[in-house]
Length: 359
Image (tube, rainbow, N blue to C red; front, side, top):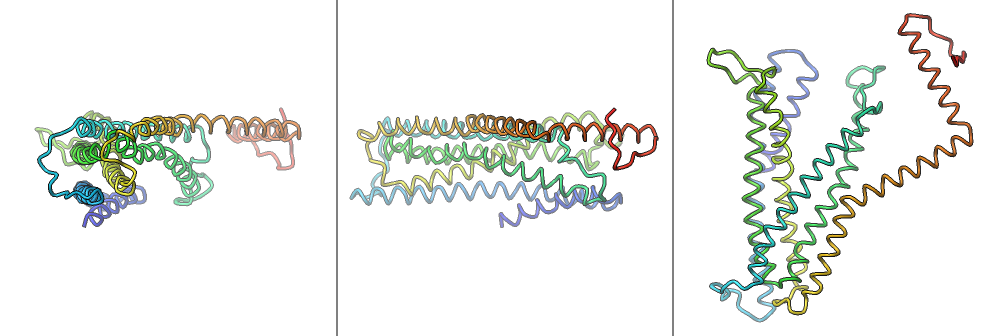
């Protein structure tokens, strides 16, 4: 049911874009706008249901984890209720908030980095510009393929850091505060992630829905005039949508995966943790150092390394081209194309293909 709601929202929103790109029929635009407004609502409902599924799945896995661990220790897990919080359980509860906020910050900063990378890639890049020698939609196939290829690789690279942080959370807390601290971290993190998920999805959806309400011509002033996309209100909501979009489509749904992966990792590695961290806390400190180093490397160090390698390869390529004379030929061809373009702009005759004009 959740997948059906989300899929319908994605389908009709994409169909709305296709209609506006490929036809000028006003009735088709109106019908596409109505479908898109319905699809936005169903997509939002699907995201909310996904959050509830993650909450209940994590709760069930938490109960199974507690039952399995206490049973292995020869204790009756049903008699564990009513105990006072120890310093380790309180620390685990605090860690649930800290790790959730760190994951949100890491994910949101990755989204901002991705946006900057796409802008930098598209700036002055002829490979992503629609081709003038083709007819639509062939004009957009090669540029879109280039852009999708770049965005896919960049997305995979930026997801490594949050993924390491997710898998490292139970290992750090379980060894630093023991199994009881891990239980409280998982329980508290489940509640925090669910609450933040609902808040982020609803707040982002509010910005998006308000802007589409104006875009589709549904907002009117006191005189009954339509407030359209040319108004100042629409521009202001555009700024809000830039904030709400990442919250609704990225940070909120990402929390579902975060808490589920934390729960699964905790269950798989349950034999690593002791009830008391008296012997395992040094390994917890090591885990903190290792995870911090890995997160820092894949968040900043990998980018620096890739840029350094690209610069080194480009330098080597330029040196080889200079030695072979290829660079000079490319420069002459580029100057030749510039002269031909200037002649065409001035309305002069095109030069022959065999002609080589340098000045």
